[in-house]
Image (cartoon, rainbow, N blue to C red; front, side):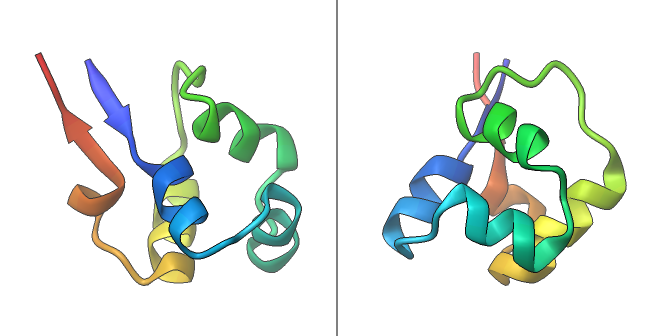
Length: 66
């Protein structure tokens, strides 16, 4: 299973879904699904945009857990 740490990172930085959507141009629904960990797939350009915006690496945003 892949764990997405978007909600934790956004919480630490007090970011709202609407702010991230506006600043990155990523669809709000996509961010909501990632935030709630209900996304079943994600485009690489979305991963890239989130990593750049949050200034984190992919390993900071996603984690493979058993």
